[in-house]
Length: 352
Length: 108
Image (cartoon, rainbow over all chains, first blue to last red; front, side, top):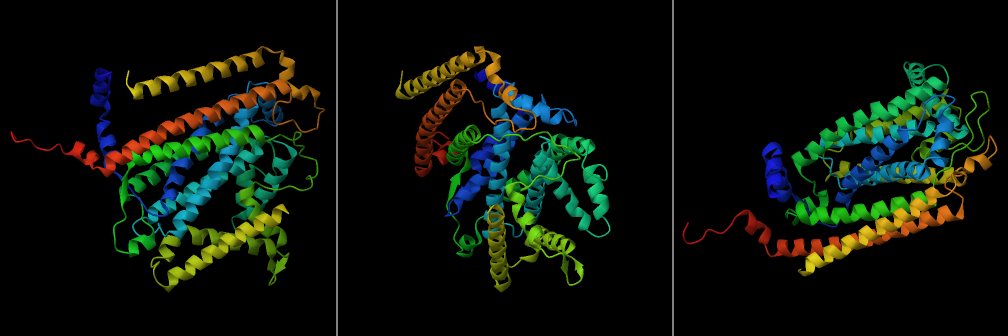
């Protein structure tokens, strides 16, 4: 065993990595639990990749084959329904933890100097995660997924100048067709994974480069927060969290496996009660409630512009909130809480 | 055989046993006529396909598997707890730093 270890060490030089992990310290304070969210996202991403590859062995991204191949996976492949369920639920778990991770960073002001680039790459990863959810929703090619994709891809049309072009690029034409399905599939299994790997590499490098952030309130006390060695103390704790999350995921996947509706008919009218995934519900509800005309402008355009302004503000928050301890910082924190309450409220309203 | 080795051996045997038991159950499910794996045949076109297998036997096999998963997780969590306690004790006593910088003896 020692000979093998020496052989590997001589070629890969992994001792440098273990030394780095042994020296790395995780600050201990009342928000330490937030540090577990980053690695939990990686866990679910790994599960998504493994189950996604398994599903891709049998999935056919064609108009005639998409729905039938998903039905085949669910009914004929051994434990195919479970693989699909784990894939679907792990995406939900991942996005939920991405939101917790994001909110934790936002409210502990962990994005401030010198971590602006970490925040920006994190926001890119959030966008990619949502895009994964959006493109994956169409792949079963049932009535609901077709209708939701029609609504979703119609939204950018309201954007001035580039809106119509953007919708055409997303749909691969004027309307949602078999070409859209192929395009969404390629984006889901090829373009987005490559983008995620690139952003994730930069994000993780920056996290290691700057170390783990200490919450603003702890830092203001002027006393260094006590630390815990990453290896093995924190890593073992993290492994425990992973195990519990894995158990929860498998349980939910078994108990509440997602079904699949009848094959989508391009000529059929949209079914009643269409709803997007839970993380798009607040936008969906906002669009539903927005009046047709606002100050003489198209209501949909105003709603889309408000949403885009919100996203831009979120992306640029480290540059806007550059003095978190002062009045400006407190106002921004208040606005962030209000935004969160609004999103949660609208999502609940949409479900009622 | 020290206590640690005994614990590791016991857990290993338990996990191996659980995998074998789950495997037997799974194999029995797969040996069953394939028609039971095809609820789609009972579904009329245009209707929603059921999400999970309907036959009671398959459902039971899945729930037994789930129980084994949780049991394995509980054992692994218990083992991790022991390791965390040990690592924390080593850290509190400062022994992790002692490993990094071995004390120089009188001959050095």
